[in-house]
Image 1: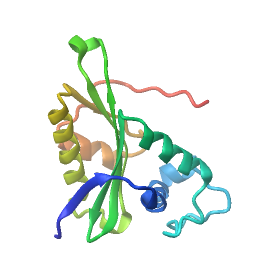
Image 2: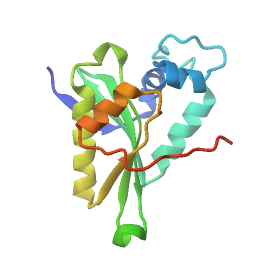
Image 3: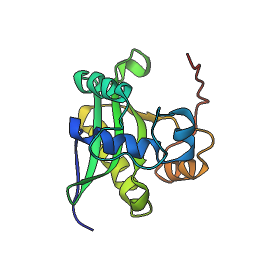
Image 4: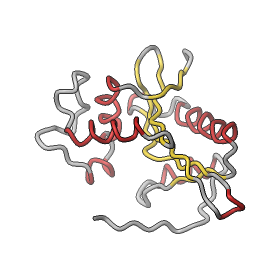
Length: 163
């Protein structure tokens, strides 16, 4: 496999990131895009809803958030958002929250997700975080097995309130 490069997402990556976010039944059911099909978004960005552009700008401007792209042969093949959360609990520990982990559907099963997670955990260690946490939809049973295989423990019950 060619070298997998991890880098901060750029504006031109947004269409590919949105395509990865929408490329599964769970995400597609909660993120309808007006006028867009369920097919991957074209790289021109013409079909990307303005809300995604605003979200990118907000994440990009926030020093405690990093939108990451995993790039292979010059193309985005994975994405994840890393958020660094300061806290008082755990003796003032900073933690990393990993969200929106996606691997492009034609590259799933190639070990990219495993490499992405290993890279993210190393970033947390280098920053001095004492905990890495993530949530995953209860319907994603394959993801639960994947994260457990990496050493993550289902130690808490997460709750959300849609607004």
